[in-house]
Image (cartoon, rainbow, N blue to C red; front, side, top):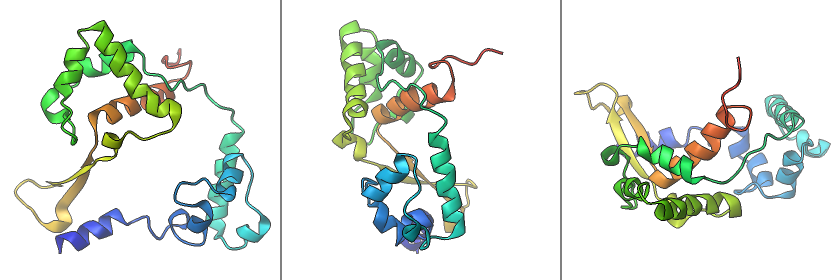
Length: 190
């Protein structure tokens, strides 16, 4: 019963247009097909393809290509030593350690040595600069927490995914910090 409840929870999006045929087949699992490239370049797919889609899906696609016209914001896929130190200085060891066994304490200790901090910041940057996914970043542990402590009913459990700390910190630096603020990562002026 628990497995079927989790399967329902994890597959909620499986019937949405982007996750089900025919559109999911045309995009491909890695969104690297010609249709995906067309959309990413800021154009709608062919009229023949649009006929296969629901009006709501077409509306989403129009919105997506409209965002392309806003112009790119400069995102630097590089984690500086200062960013590395800033993130790990405030990260707690025990709740933040990683599924792979890489301990956050190691990164916190690396913050004390300029050479190690530089090495770690470069290693966290490389996957984003080259487009690969580090093997240990792909490991996830799913945990179920009670929404109501003392009431472990299946429908009242919350599933959380524990990801690699290095990946979490890199995303925090590269996406949350850079996209969260305008002016190259600085808070907007009032």
